[in-house]
Image (cartoon, rainbow, N blue to C red; front, side, top):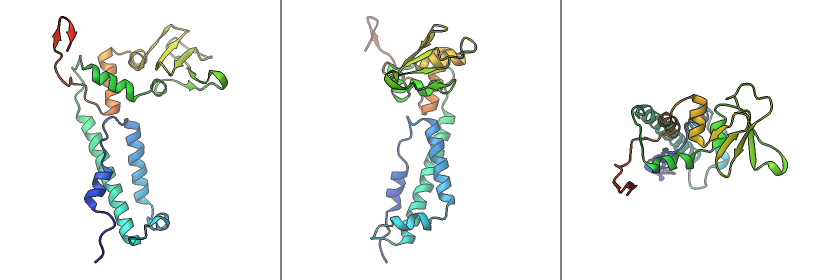
Length: 203
């Protein structure tokens, strides 16, 4: 009897990376793509890529097992996110705030609420957006400073970072804006540790 092409325990590990910090949209696309691939007749697309040290049947079995584990892992991560309690958490650690800011781009957050425009030519570095905070904005009066990860509307003089944008468009306070973005990344916003202070300075 020949050895299997890949050990199932190895395939399971490969199919289940740490999904924390991956935005929910990416998880949805990944799980739907995996389900689509499972529904396709596996022989025709895989036959050309079968390594020489295994049979077509072994390779197909390993591939299907990998996809099944991938789907199961994402389903478990989505369920974990549904169970996280975001209500009632007013303060969190600076490390969690920085993690959220590092993982999300302001232009992506603005696209939740409005149209983002990529200019051509020499001004391509700074994008624009149609601001819906001060009524109908026929010409884009909002500017996205991507290097600083900030946005500002010259029509209503409002803007800021990703937390400010969520607060402005959803009309929520800062703790709820943090919770909204943390949920998108699957992060728990409960403090990692208690803040110990000496003379007003965090240790």
